Image 1 (cartoon, rainbow, N blue to C red):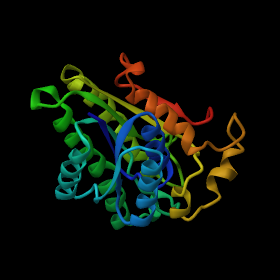
Image 2: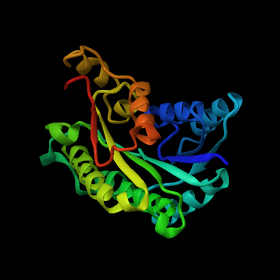
Image 3: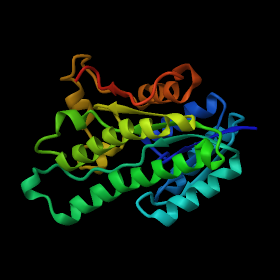
Image 4: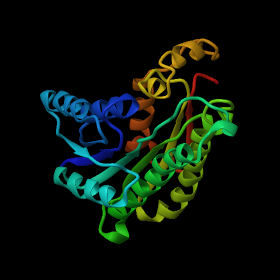
Length: 247
């Protein structure tokens, strides 16, 4: 029976790259999306054409009922053995003094509450004490949690800091349940998220200032995520893996 992997925010960027690589490595992939149905369908089509299994599943991770529905639907692919908590958003760059309460609430609702709800349901479904088979969970944090993202995204950085704490705490809670919990912390990765924050050239522009002299690729982050999901990382839990070009 297939191992099922649920990836939130998998229609683009790091989530998309992770879905495609996971399918290559034998996972059946639940491709979650919020609004971009066509993009999610394209990811699924690529997986199916290559001989894999995948489903496109709509759901807003910041709404509990939709998270529950998402996990229920993913079960059609087989027993859940992995979760990638990836869905996240940014807003246009601003110093905190100029951020509205509405912006802050939206950033924290999706990036913090949505991630906590997803991680909670992943824990419930995979925990051996709840009838699950164990597995692995990877949270997609950000190097911004360490750098602070001053004058741009201190709200986003704070939200990702919460995911770092969640990773360490949940790893301790779930070790006895047969579930490993780790996080990756990408830096300047060339994905669509920068355009959604009003800076489509941000990764390329700032990537040149890193020690490696370039922006990262979504596929490079996906490789780390798949290693953390795999049994090859069987003694790794509670780790924060920086993928930021030395930034």
